Amino acid sequence: MTRNALGAAALRFAAALFLPLGLLAPAGMWLLLLIAGAGALIASPGRWRDHGLGLPTLAGAGLLAWAALSLAWTPDPGQAAVSLAKLAGLMMLAAALLAGVARTDPSDAAKIAGALAATLVLGLILMTADIAASGAIRRAVVPDSFAATDGLYGYNRGATVAALAVWPALLWLWPRSQLLALALLLWVLAILAGLESASAAIGYSVGLAAFAAVVIRPRPALAWIGIIAAVAVLTAPLLPFTILSPQVIGARVERSSQSAMHRLYIWRFAAEHIAERPLAGWGYESARAFPGRRATIADFDRSRTADVYKHLAILPLHPHNGPLHIWLELGLPGALIMAALVGWIPFAIRRLAVAPVRAAALAGAFTSALGLCGFSYGLWQSWWLSALALAAAIAILAARSPE
Image (cartoon, rainbow, N blue to C red; front, side, top):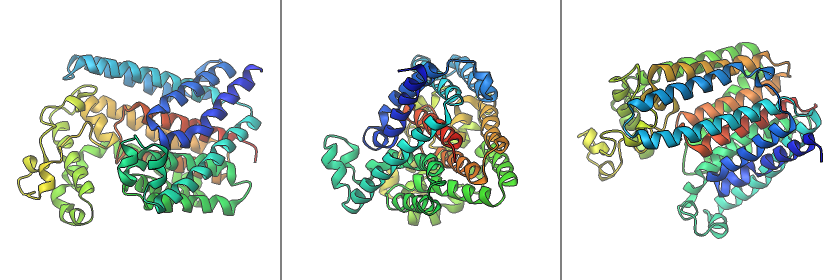
């Protein structure tokens, strides 16, 4: 087997297992990134700057350097150093993977995207049946898993992976059947809407809106997506004091979702402490050891007297919002790096010589990921970063596959 064939096989294997692993064992996503990254390096060892990855590489290096410097003032530098070493490894694998896919043969790219599309459809069939059965299939497959015994909440991470996987699958399916491609988008939306957590459905809906906008007006829509994404990162600490204040929209949100109400208080707590150290932040991984994070919502706001608020922590491990997370821990330098990166990606898509629908699908993938980042996972979680890198690589491959 040649180097190219071996690399393509590794990427195809990772694409085929992307959703199945996301549904059954999402914590193992880093293994897929390791396999795919190693395969990309084997297939096309070369210089990263040849593939237009200059800004992402610089952003990643700058983020790591600033995070390392912040170990001097983070509350638990030992644990933070271990986490930072893992982050550095993941970022190097992601860079290798994204550089490698730029040299993958277009025919291999189509096979890789097709492998993801096939397993996505199979996974969606199982998810649909399991939701109808209130989680019985998942409990039978993984009976010892906490997620499997926790109702449909066990699909939280799997739903996130599905929301990321649908876009490269759409890129592969669209030239073959536009009707089936559109049906796939609606099918995923229906599944996500039927789950108990709204985060994946909201993030995916943001991606659908971006997809529609770029199909209609590709270049201006992509420009506005980039500008809005960058501004959203930079202004994130202001929102919990204004339009996302628990006092402003609390009564309306509380009636529909106590989980959403919890998010509002987490964000307000994070924003108040960002205001105390806006320049340097509190240090990398400080959210996990943040002073006062174990206080409850009832401690934070005496007007909340319901029993549930006496048990909900005001900062459970991380702020459940990517921009607030980076502001809290890495301050203005971290926020500027993140804003530059998320603002650059839509303009990079805009420069690609691809059909409008392909650009729209890439924009949908990006905005879905950004939307998910705004509601749920910690920025430094290995499975989440691995899922993002894999989804981005497979989407790029699918966009390069022949029509």
